[in-house]
Amino acid sequence: MSLNKEQLSAIQAFVNKKGIHYLDVQMEILDHVASAVEEKMSANAALSFEEALKQTHVSFGIFGFGGVEDSIVNAMNKKYNRIFWKTFGSFFNYKCILLVGLTIFLLYQLQVLVDDYYQFLAYFLGFVVLVVVSSYIIGLRNKQYKNLLVYKSTFSYFSFFGSGFLIFNYLIGNIKYFEIIEPQQILILSSVMLVLFIIYIIAAIKMALLGFKESKLLMDKYHLLNK
Image 1 (tube, rainbow, N blue to C red):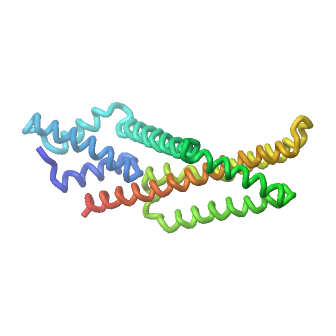
Image 2: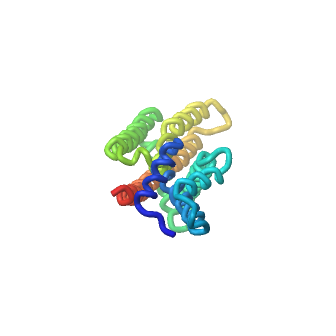
Image 3: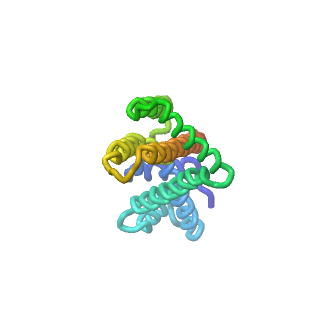
């Protein structure tokens, strides 16, 4: 049998009461619970909705919906990590590798022209700050998605910008103390690392755009469910 709108709303309130706060996780669990309740009520016509819901919750084990939530969160993180690294790796296929090599060469030449590593670094840092501030502003303008796990997961890649840049600066800033490495080699290495960092930024932006798209679809579904 199919559940009516009031019963679906009751399941949603029950799931929310159990501490499941991400809306997309709620909807995922709602689908599982609704299907299980429907099966129990179809198998036993005398079984009430409330009792079927209670039995369904018990069937999830001692951790209740928490275990399902952890499973959904882990699966979603794995999904978006896989998409992110696939996007990152796509820049090294035969279609893009020449462009990557050309960018490394141009950055190398730019460092030679500037002739001051820290001045060059200041320019690049300005670019990074611009990207981070822009992403933060975009995040503030889309606060309606903050309760979606998909939004949090796809935007999480921006959080590594600062630490990644500090690691890059530390490595390049200290590598000059190794006498076996020539200044020219340092410039080449820094150019390669900067290109990798730029590719990371592009992949992170693509993940954010994907997150926007999927978050909008999920919110449309959520609003439709709660009309």
